[in-house]
Image (cartoon, rainbow, N blue to C red):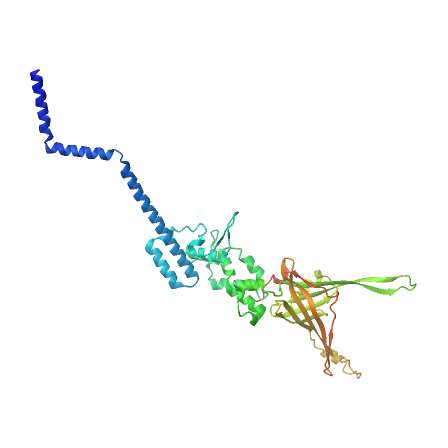
Length: 420
């Protein structure tokens, strides 16, 4: 027993002596640190996650701010404020250097970021209100030098997108032509985004307005654009003909036996064809439109009863648009007739000149705009050339003067003779 107690005492003394060893203390400290790193420390991990989340949120807020500044710069550049746009571009690049490549161009741009109202709130689906501004913004964001359009398939020949914008706009003027075929221009805008932007350019629509109203359309107010003026301001249409059909019952002569009197159903048409340069053609005939409309395609048509002249638009104080036209027969040379009767000594019949003055009220009928003309005045001015005497005869506007209705004729604008 004494020996065992002595052995135990020696062991305790050895351990006490070993605990004072510096190498063993360093080893124990390393072991404790190693064990603390291996064991999960919930407090430290939570702290690390919070730091990462805070950093991520700061980066997201910074990117959103840079996106807002970048889109604001795009809007200023579109409005023509280049210096303001450069300032916002610089601020956006300072926050996020590669912000231009981080913007998602595949989705519609947020209206709140750019300060414009491009999207219309709808429960079913959102529709873009200002499609022109939206397309222009997409072109600006996609490339510094955007093309009008890009070919859908690979082509070996030259594509129309390789033409300069000036050449393309000149082609569009040929599409509109001197006949002001704005319907063809609207159909051309459905090809692609680039064509839509070009066809909405103010140059084409301003030229069209000047052709229609001349000096009376120098001010754009109250319209927002030249296109809006052309579409909403009343004017006669040039891509067709106005037709008026009149029919009535006329009593005939009484029969020889006196038992009956014949009744005749009389039916005739009036045609009005307007041209953008102020010329007008008027025709009264019993022939149906199917045979007359093709003959009114050009101004050089030859018909005995055809009246030609000029017209003007007048907008009264009550916002009613009226059309006043002065027409007469074409003047033809009568040299052959004079030679034929040069040996005749009888007095020739007095030469007279008949000029017809027509007044019409322009209104819209049905779905078509400016498709109805209502009679307000019709008179004939007869001038005797030998005496210089002038006689004016005004006609009563009764049921014999039915309103004109517009009929669009595709062949009138099928060919372009001159550009706009």
